[in-house]
Image 1: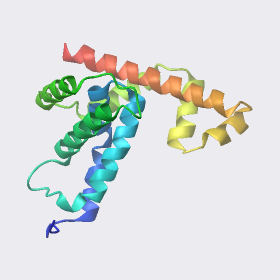
Image 2: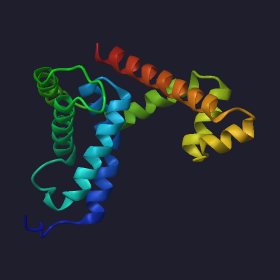
Image 3: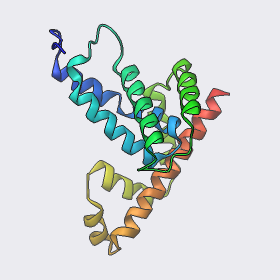
Image 4: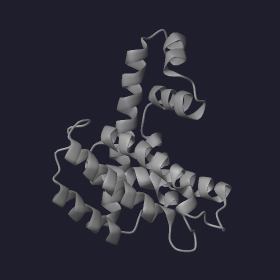
Amino acid sequence: MPENSTHDPSAFNLELLRIQLELHQQIIRLCGSTSAAQDILQAVNLILIRRQDEWDPTRGRLIAWAVKLAQFELLHRISDKKRDKICFSSELVIRIAEGLEAEEPVPTDRRLRYLEECLAGISDRVRELLLAHHGRRESVKAMAWRLKRTPGSVANSLYSARESLRLCIEGKMMMESR
């Protein structure tokens, strides 16, 4: 395929970074599983990077293309049944995807406000764990050593904290949509 003469790799990379949260949320809503969504997100990102020359910012938003690729990736995984035990039928995935296309995404500033509100509601100890790992990029292994805990227990605490935040944010989004 001919290379797009207006293609700017840095603009593509910035746009790809900007859509990550929204794309991840859309994929979770499509497949219903955060772990499956992570795998699909990685696969979609690889496809987008390989095919970035095909993106023309004047013809459409990158998020729309990325969500379509995620739908195809999920359908492919459903038909394979090799990796994850995703139980949705292909028809259901298509119906959900069609419903998502009509929805307006929650603006990033609102999601950040929800995150801040939910972070304020957790204990200082849990907030510090999240800040160390996600803010300062401290590894689970280093955190475990510093806290005199096993890496598994630190990883479980991080997972529980992220899951609590996710549920809190989703709850706030649902309350607002009513």
